Amino acid sequence: MTVGSRSDAGRTVRFAVLGTGYWADTVHAAVLAEHPEADLVAVWGRDPARAEAVAERHGAVAEPDLDTVLGMVDAVAIAVPPDIQVDLACRAAERGCHLLLEKPLALSVVGADRVVEAADRAGVRSVVFFVRRFAEPSAMWFDEVVVPGEWHGGSVSWIASIFGGGSPFGESPWRKQHGALWDLGPHALAALLPALGPVEDVVAVRGHGDEVHLAFRHEGGGASSAMLALTAPAAAEHTSMRFWGPAGIAEVPPGEPDSATDGLMRAVSELLAAVETGAAHPCDVHFARDIVSVLARAEHYLIR
Image (cartoon, rainbow, N blue to C red):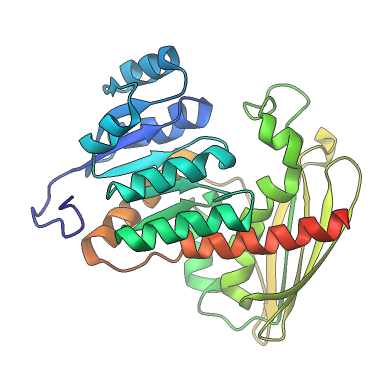
């Protein structure tokens, strides 16, 4: 692969989408088909008929052989359940493909370590798509207010209701099994870790349904918390994020974030910039691995 240097200034980077579900179709494939610096070449999925349908919708080809797909492209966007993502990401990295991945990176530290080791060994760049780190208005607030600030504490609350009908994620088997800890926990930690530093200790308690309450002590001396649920009553749905420190309180701007496609458009651009410069992205597989480690410790606390 020669895309690591991107010596052909201005050329588009060839992508494949690995996955055929709702998110792969309506977000990953849709964005890559429209991004000015990306060329959606191929779609691969475990269900060939669905891969054909997704590819046709977005002007790509469906290819049933994964090794053939990986030989056709410079980068992959993977949108599959996290336990399946690990093997696909490792195989893609081993073939020299840059990685646009979903959270959580894996459902175990062992799995996350495998992806990190494969990416490092191959020298490929990576971005893991934590939606609110890329979608406005939270992305700009995070970059301009949170990152440069000095914070002593923080909190994230993400209370959702996805299993009552109507949500495209309500039939997701891995979400039903692993719940809010692994689905929403990565979003919370993607905000808390950069602001307050690595987690030194975590405690966790369960609430109703899959509701979890997490408390973190950070190595820099700060503390933070997260309250997460996918099974809340619809009337209780809400999200909030705030930090406090010497300058006072910073709270995420009100209102719903821009669409996931807008956020992913930015994530693709930032992956391509990382490929261009060779610099690691702040939301790369190393960062995502640290998040998996914290979640695994919290899960162990819940079941011990």
